[in-house]
Length: 148
Ligand code: RB5
Image 1 (tube, rainbow, N blue to C red):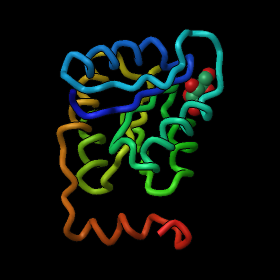
Image 2: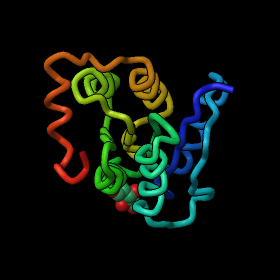
Image 3: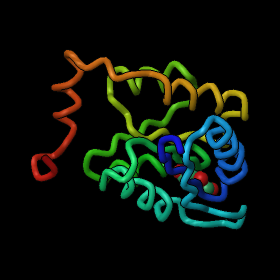
Image 4: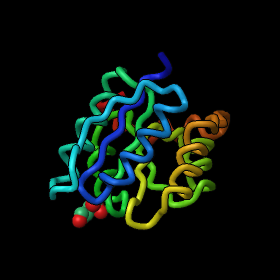
């Protein structure tokens, strides 16, 4: 079984989540679907917090969130220590979020990217390494003192 990777969305991201999930599974990832499980209206923070808890606890190293803009999911996920959720609407943003910010959660704006674009963004997020070096101290400064 491949790397365990949690994924979650609200209703706005549900349809695209199903497609991203299938693609990740086909690529050999052990996908943990934390919901939502239908297009019925729901509250994005519930899913963001559930996914962020997987990262914060160390049960998973990285994950994918989807909502309409990616923003609400990122706000909630980024309240968790050691979670760095990046909204990315282009593969270049996702790659830079990995290279410079060591992002460990991708927040996809489902209402603004089609399936092909989402695939390219997810690939960039999963296949790009953190550059370290001068970026390491900056990333460490993101954490509040009580979280260190
Ligand atoms: C749902 O309508 C929408 O507000 C939500 O998906 C997200 O975009 C919030 O940030």
